[in-house]
Image (cartoon, rainbow, N blue to C red; front, side, top):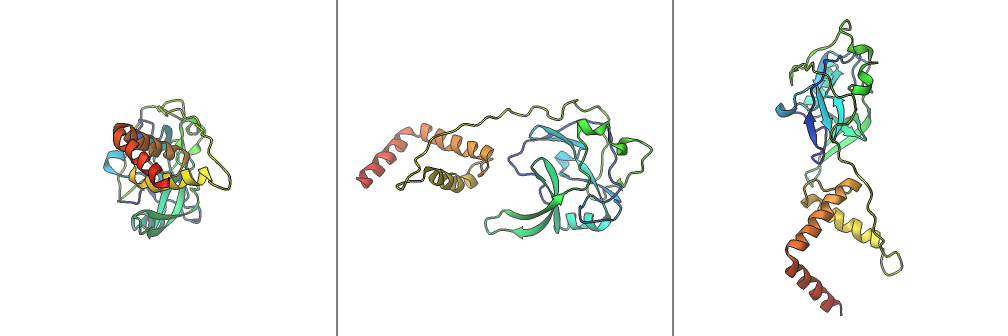
Length: 228
């Protein structure tokens, strides 16, 4: 089992698609060796597919690695991580006291897995181009149905929602909200300090207050009395 390539907040889906080639060089941006293995980036049994959708963005799920770099991945010395809609080569710094993995991004992969809009112009897609052997760790299964013409499938639309907060000598409302969200996010599924992650924290907190309205009001009244 390799280190996770994507955070839990991302929705992962299987996508049927055509076979594609990886390589010819290792995808580690600091390595100059030739690729010898076709590595499934997300190799869990339920996700052992050539094509996936990450939060609606369709991408290939394989990249070429040389033997030493492939060993680094499976020995948890390195990891491939999904950052800003690209796969990055990262060094692994162990686990934090909080239980979070400590990744050190190096650079995007030299060869990013193809996407539907780039596959047609990718010379590696041709059957007469040599390809590394199957990954000895995670296996390989070829899918030949065509992928969707678009690069995104079923991705939820998003928009910004703002709120005015006090910003004076008495109170910095932005700092107050940031602190509250940061403290609550580890307790909320899909919650984190990103703009999309904050939504889940706020919804969970407001829904809890609404469900347990009497205690919520009582706690506010108690706080007001103490402040007076």
